[in-house]
Image (cartoon, rainbow, N blue to C red):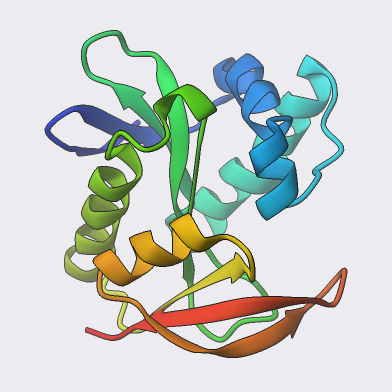
Length: 169
């Protein structure tokens, strides 16, 4: 289901048909380094991951992470959207892109659109973001879409120290 459209992309719900793309994205070295190893190694595991994470979030919260695909080719290039974690009081924005689509403005374009959607359609007030302490490019992007660094926090399950950002209406 299409959620949003930007100048160059369409954001839509991730489906089981995206299993090959999800498997590829989750096993990129940058995803593992900055987001974490999800231990998804097969198409079947990718389908299960889609059901347990993406589809469950859409049903439970009315939002989630969305596939970002190029308008020209309909090829998925990344994900961007909102996550609701038990360990945080508000929804947080997240994004990840295949390496060949990084540093081309797609993350900014999609996250800016997702924030407008979150405010105008979903009615989200405060939105959070958490990033690895050494993920400088994501920190710069968050600041570009009006997030402010709040503090360092520790998050389960690894008790890793992360940077917490927030954006109010």
